[in-house]
Length: 285
Ligand code: PAF
Image 1 (tube, protein in one colour):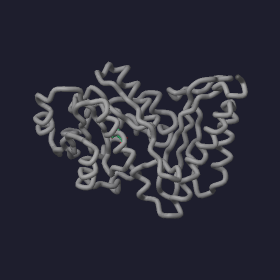
Image 2 (cartoon, rainbow, N blue to C red; image 1 turned 90 degrees about the horizontal axis):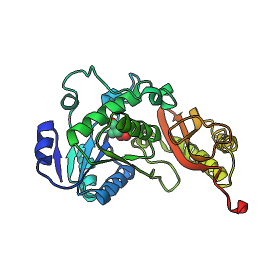
Image 3 (tube, rainbow, N blue to C red; image 1 turned 90 degrees about the vertical axis):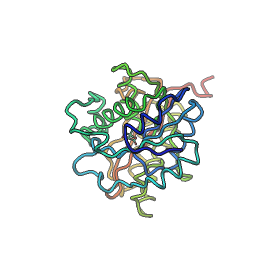
Image 4 (cartoon, rainbow, N blue to C red; image 1 turned 135 degrees about the vertical axis):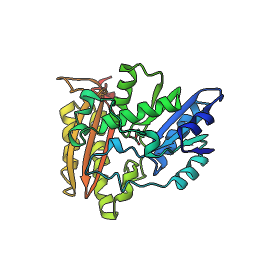
């Protein structure tokens, strides 16, 4: 496995390599969730490129850009164990040689949910995803379901801007107690980590209600009831949306996302679960 730092080295390492190419884009501080993306990439491609880049464009002015964990050596060691072929870990100047003037807008997708709490975040994500896709030229790009809104935005960018790349979603990887894996979990002390479990417990309650055939408001109420038990969580939102983050009409049946975001201490966490609302339950047969 090679680690390259510049566009020129990347282009050289990619030149003349035949076969299907996958990319897994990351900001480093890799955990098992990232490694599951690489393993999934290995299954669908001949060549797996992993990018590691903490993208300043997607951080707000008061966010954790400076303290975001960085460990290229540790990340490279992990990636070597799961079959990555090439790691592209550019500097900020390499990705943005000039202050970008033209950027990608997530449009309405970037204004709701995360967008209300992190204005401009998804524009920054899409801009770097678009740039990295152009530099790596993958056939397929894999993204985690954990960042559900990011996934919806990336899919929409690919469709609306006719990017020639297939997008694959990989399920969220959880700790044994349910906490969704995230590089930001490293910020949590033991008490905060215990508090953070309320997110996955709330989603599980919503999923259980949905599994029993409950309607949207009952599903949301089941999750809200669990969230209310944990005063240590400063809730940003709990939302039940359709698969493209649209509002649910009355009596909606079909695929849905139950999304939650909030702060535990200074750490902002997000999680979600994919549901099938109004699916026929066994009692209905
Ligand atoms: O999901 C992430 O880690 C980032 O948002 C991404 C897609 C690598 C863009 O910086």
